[in-house]
Image 1 (cartoon, rainbow, N blue to C red):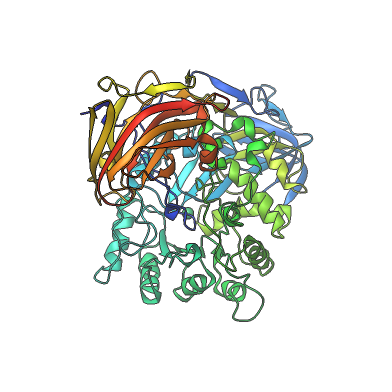
Image 2: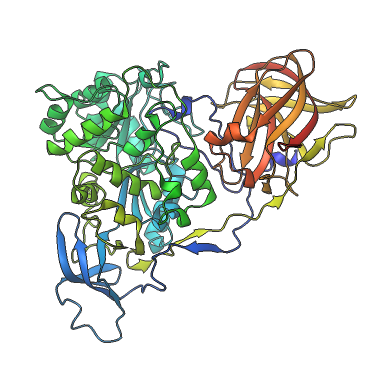
Length: 623
Ligand SMILES: [Zn+2]
């Protein structure tokens, strides 16, 4: 077994489920190999309290947003993980040794609830560091969910946000949601939907998510669940005491979800602005009593092919808390050409109309889709909800009391005696300027203070530009075959050095949604150890092909969440020179300071291939 194929201690997958990221073509999912442990905590957020108390304490003289309303100059007393008392002077009678946090000039809020994520890896720790104490996930691996639930039950899992999730989603064979390395029991004509829902409930699904997505938003038709099946799934969910929510990608699909009786929708749409009228989506949603999670954070990535930039990576209050993987996620772009008539402005307008019509609007990000990340993006979602026309307090309700109500979480989402002490203390007044939520002074989960510091990046070995291999000698341990077999795929590859040339031959086979097979090179001192290639501008090499292709150069990083940056190259039967620039990979979130591997691969096109590679070099401009 080549070294690159060692079993991973922690299986990762990328949960792209936004309108369509997974169909962008370059999204390939890898299980992550071990990364060196972080060495030290990075700098804390600028305004963070030095040592916020845990356990029994009080925040005094603070502006309180209780989930719906604002109260000035109150005390909030915390004990045993819960809110013990709220009110002016509530802390006055406490013993002198109970720690007090001065709330003057600050605002205390319920811990934030992100109502749309896809959780994996470090998602829940990342969320908590930004004040998101509860995550409502809309499709994840049931084993991940079960593990987190077990920790929540055991000790409250103080280092991570609480997780609730739909678990596996409802979709048809080949439909949206089947393209990930999670086994999805798809729903076909023969499926007993009641039994299907019962299986989800047994797996731990807290609600049922139904995919209504025909692919129109990305110009690539997809099979999808239709009217009768949607209604049958909603009814089955209700029989099993679960709500049923729907993913939609267009106005037509939003109407279909309402026709089917869904309890909530987890996106708005870009193809129309749901203008006024009795039969409009807004009027129907209000009449049906559904809630809507607009996910403006992910949808702004579809504002033109380049998308809007969230600005989060440059935010002076949030940037110190971002780890490298989060920065890479924020830099990533969908890069999908916007279909005619699709506009982010439509999503903003519809969201404003929904709120004005009294439809509960819930803040959710759809992290970690391109342009978003766990935790930080919830602060952007608040800003976008205000841009859509919500007042700052309505936006804050959308991230606290409203999702708690919609998902039946009676113990959180508000600050009131007896509720969980999930709290956010910020400098300034987010009830007038919602961006003040970014000025984190302290975050508590069930009364336990959270460290407001980013985990340190793994230390990377600096690698200078220069020749990598001319294949005049046998392959060293820094080269290995690599295929999708690690992810359960069926592709095969063989490497050989013949006459001073690397021969890569194999077959890309169906089995994994993003199949690949090829040669992998590790720039670091050991396989998958991060290398700092900041001084390198491009990977240059010669290549020729005896069949198959196009091929791809893929660059994996310690901060890329297991998703490589990749660009195609198409060699002919004669030798050609290629130079693939890191700058051209930047919009895929490439972090050149944390490169773990570079691959020359066939796929995702299926079939046999034959590739020769020679004279691999890391180049820098001016050389
Ligand atoms: Zn999603």
